[in-house]
Image (tube, rainbow over all chains, first blue to last red):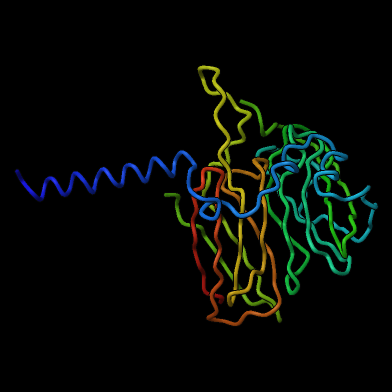
Length: 156
Length: 103
């Protein structure tokens, strides 16, 4: 028997098994994502989202400003969104799209020393309000902006 | 393994501005293929940025973030030559870490 070949086979088998385990998601939680708030990302209304975050009714605030966000987005698959909060002690900024199948698009945790201003790009299924939800000093604040979409980003 | 991220970090005044472009499909789980079968969701769930062993931004994303996500943010501090490290993890447990030198 060819020893080299046998060893190679054994090692090969091991790798396949590990890959299978990884693919099936059996790796311990630490090897996978850090916390991901599934409850919040599954919500369909603002009230549900607030409940998932454990916060009350957010307060409308003029200290949250949208930047780089268009009034009319030609392509709903790539809508630039920039949010700047000038509320002291801003802890996190969330982006919600009102008419998407699930409202919550992203949550950014802002540690001290990081500017409470982020920008990214999101998908929008149709014209809708984009809501910026800011948590500052334990309280929630919000601002919204309507964005018209000429071509939806969630169609098949 | 996914393609590397493009990361640019520049000193702006007393802060560092970081811009990241990731390479990811960001499949929503809402679309159907030609046979009418739902394409399973596949998207980045967690993004973490660190500088000097300190987390400067962490994010949780849903599938509504655009394909090949773009992200930009700013943090206080950072000097030319420092490293900014960005890691993402997707809902399949795949992850990717890249770093950039602040310029």
